[in-house]
Amino acid sequence: PAVALGSADAALNDMVRAYTTFADSGRMSEQTLISRIEDAQGRLLYENYYTPAKLVFQPETAEQVTAILQRVVNGGTGQTIRTVYELKSDLAGKTGTAHSYTDGWFIAFTPDLIIGVRVGAMDPAVHFNNSQGSGAMLALPIAGTTLKTIEQSQELKAKFLSTFYIDDKYIAAMDCEPTRDPAVKNYLKDAIKEPRVTSKKIKRWLRKQFGD
Image 1 (tube, rainbow, N blue to C red):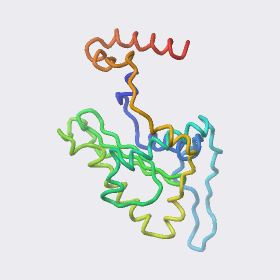
Image 2 (image 1 turned 60 degrees about the vertical axis):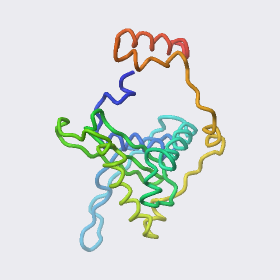
Image 3 (image 1 turned 180 degrees about the horizontal axis):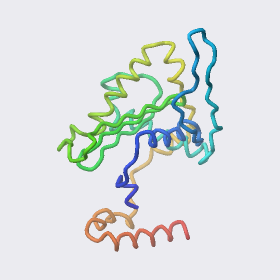
Image 4 (image 1 turned 180 degrees about the vertical axis):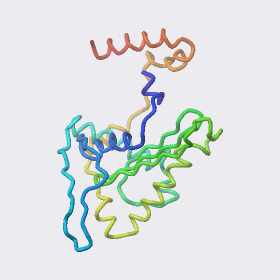
């Protein structure tokens, strides 16, 4: 369960690849560095073969997650994309801040583009000691500046900043009253004091909710 809290290290290219599944209706693609090479006369010297994308979860799930991540940039921790960089295009994204501000992250995407930014030192001992080291403060401005440049170019905007098509029911589903499950209310607090005991409690709760 600790993985969901950000305890595991992840490379930026892995994070970007994971987010392609939301942008591409649940399909995951192989990454490639070079797509084609031509000589000075325009003759094709090399062209990469793209492995067909693999469906890893249903398109409906991708729509739901994308609808949630749109709210991050429209009114959440990533809203400076709108308020500071004044981007008008259809975007979804997520900020991220590692423990003790050792890394700041931001990933933004459209159906045709994913931008991932990670800011941090090679040694985690080098880090900020306050929110100035958050993903919204460090990583988002790099993505925001890049996206602003793309949006100002008609050619690039048409190529990369396309519109999401999300069923209205997923957007409407988020307009609900906040809820809290009493069974998990104190799990995080208990996990710090008694991690082994809490892990067993979580496993029992998961089995009760979803079965074996």
